[in-house]
Amino acid sequence: MIRVAAVGDIHMGLDSQGLLRPAFDTLPDCADLLLLAGDLTRHGTPEEARVVAEEVTGLPVPVVAVLGNHDHHDEKPEEVAAVLNAAGVRVLEGQGMVVEVDGARVGVAGTKGFGGGFVGRSGSEFGEPLMKEFIRYTRRCADGLRTALDELAGQGCGTRVALTHFSPVPDTLAGEPPEIYPFLGSYLLAEAIDTAGADLAVHGHAHAGTEHGMTSGGVPVRNVAQPVIRRAFSVYHLHGHEAPTTASASAGAVG
Image 1 (cartoon, rainbow, N blue to C red):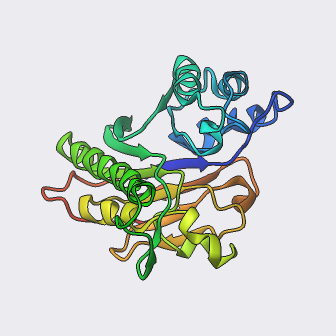
Image 2 (cartoon, rainbow, N blue to C red; image 1 turned 30 degrees about the vertical axis):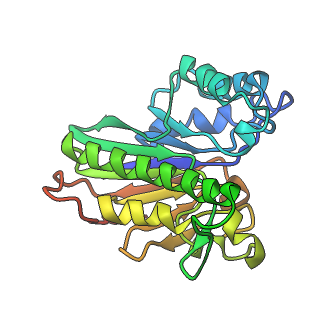
């Protein structure tokens, strides 16, 4: 059994030192890795990133993260990522990471993702250049996620997790105003997950959303924004299995 701890939208500021560290110190007792689903800072400053780094430095479990929109606000996402990487956090954007858990290879593929909406109510690459670039940016994020998941399968990862900030499905947005769904996620992320295959998809961003959802291909989706899960992190249990020989979704059990 593979135990995945996850949380997003912790929005740490300069006054947040030590708030999560006591809970994170319990991770070895209940989890094999920690996923951070973006919006780790309030305004995306390197100073706030250092607060986050202090919360996770030296943890005895691997920590994997993606950035969120708040982490881009100060327009220094590379500096934010560098601070976190220096603290031992692997920050992903269109990349994957392999974690060894009791001899099993667990792959985590990550991207921030972006908006655009969902099937039947989504933007398209048509019209003004700004609108086309909006959707093309989301597509590039989704393509990077799909490629990373495929590469992890080729590296022998029988269990794969997709980590994003924006949501791949509307299910986990329930509770948010429908008018803002296009700014909370995109079906392109779900298409990437279903095409490449994954056992679990984790995201944040939707503070008033719902924890549980699923892609049309049957991959469990979990909204781990802290205002949704109302705890320092949630833990999900996955059954490890052999790496797939084809890129098809094969969701394992999720607790």
